[in-house]
Length: 206
Image (cartoon, rainbow, N blue to C red; front, side):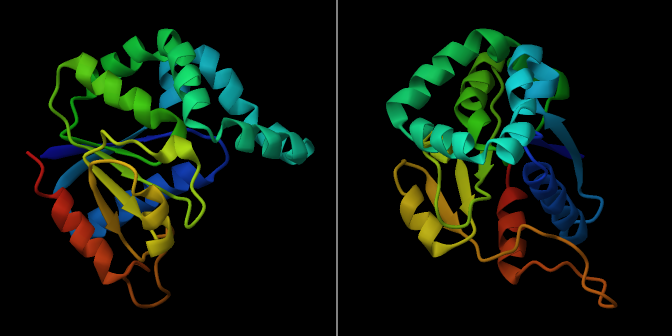
């Protein structure tokens, strides 16, 4: 059975919920076809960086203006490159080891701050693993999401697709809700038919 590994970070509840929603949709559409696992990247691979990840909740709750300033300050390609370089010594080896240990057949990221590091960790691991980024922001995208070396990038709206067209890779625009809660009494997920197409595409990895 092929394995899909979902990478997220608990900076708020949305990224974990997005990963769980995709897992539920995949299981619903391809029941008992894939083994699916989740990994909180900062919690599992870097105790130091996880300190900053845990600050997200308190900062956005008590200092929203500061969070806004940090968001727009970091929405810059050059600054993100510097931040990534500073982060590498604290997480790259551990993330590469995680990929080796879990040996996934595909990796799906639902968090913007781990994508560039994941590309490098996959290369370091020596494994040939398709890397898919699912952007959870519907319209306005932070530059951290933009990962030209990802094999696929999934966005929810045409607006997001236009903003994301900065890399070489295929962009798939999908009109689907990040929620995969079940429709009452109907026994089916609240995802559009396009999510089935996405799942079919994912089923082609080897």
